[in-house]
Amino acid sequence: MSESRNSRICPKCGERKRPKSFKRIRGRALSYFCKQCQWEEGFARYHIRNRILLRMGYRTYKDYLKSPLWSSIRLRVLNRDGRKCKLCGCRANLVHHQRYSPGTLKGDSIKDLLSLCQPCHKEHEFDESGRKVDALQVRHSVNRAFAA
Image (cartoon, one colour):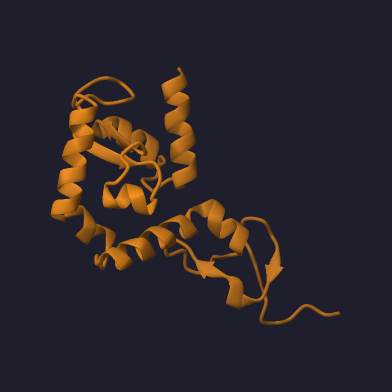
C-alpha cells in the first residue's frame, strides 16, 4: 500500500498520520504533531484548561487571572504558605498551578497550587529559550526540588 500524499510525519516520533489528526503547537510553522505527542507537548492540557474556563464564563486564561475569583484564590494560597516560596523559602509573589482541574480553577481545592518567587517560577516554567515547559515536566521538576 502506498503512502498517502496527504499524510504528514510527526517531527517528534516520526509516525506518519493523516493530517486531520495533527495539530500545530506553539506556532511552529510546519510542525504537526500526532495525538500522543500533542499530550507530551502539553497541548491537550492547556486545551482542557481552556474548555473548563469557558464553562466557568472566562473567554481566556488571561481573563481568569484578572478575575476577582483568581485574586481570592491567589491570596488564600499565599497566606497558606506564609508568603514564602515553596522551593527556596524567599518571599513569594506568584501562585503556580500544578494541575488545571475544575476544583483547582474554581478554588474548591488549593492543594495543587504553590506559592513561588519569580526566579523559581521562571526556572521551572520556562526553558533556556523562554518557551513554556510542558506542565507535566514542571510538576516533576517541582516535586524533585521538594525532595532535595
